[in-house]
Image 1 (cartoon, rainbow, N blue to C red):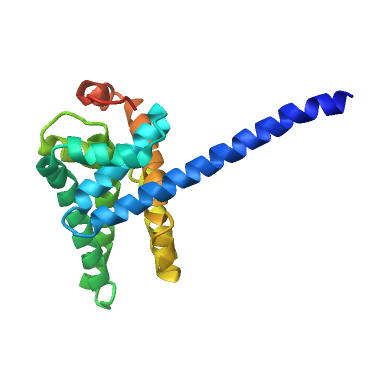
Image 2 (image 1 turned 90 degrees about the vertical axis):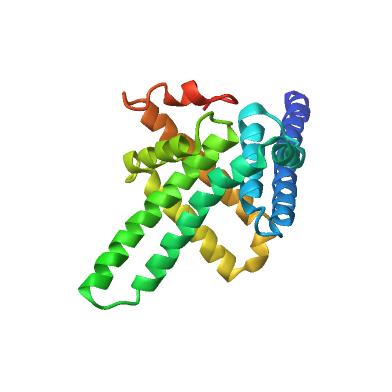
Length: 227
């Protein structure tokens, strides 16, 4: 009798968790789909990336589960030119560092190896900075572009040996998965990467705010959600 009485609540809890998991999976798939569609013109990649980050941030931090709707709202309501500048320039710089690493990795001379090492360091710093910039832009951090880039670079350097390797592993794993199985790009790989990068950026931001240099920097410039 006791077991029979306990089974219905346990079954209800199991069903609710399954439904929550299915809902999360559906949200990720829908967000990934609209993200890829908006990225098709290529020049819209910066605002699409920002829209995806904003939707994920509001979903996980604020409880808003209509992620596709939040993605479109973020694109329509955000300043297009400012977002394209803030996100597009760091993405372009990161792409240039990738090309530099790719060029010098084939060299055998001492100079080529030094350039490769410098290029790799620049790539890690640029990649880590992009993670913080995307978090700032998604949360409507108020400030000039140079101020936001400078803050992100400072955070990247401060957390170089903590979040730097995490960002690098996330990008490398995502790239390998995309190369080995391209359909993963359609069924959620980009959004999954953004999710992991968002968590890493939040971790680095919280870690930096414990120190005197960055304490209060985020809260003084944020106009949206807190960290």
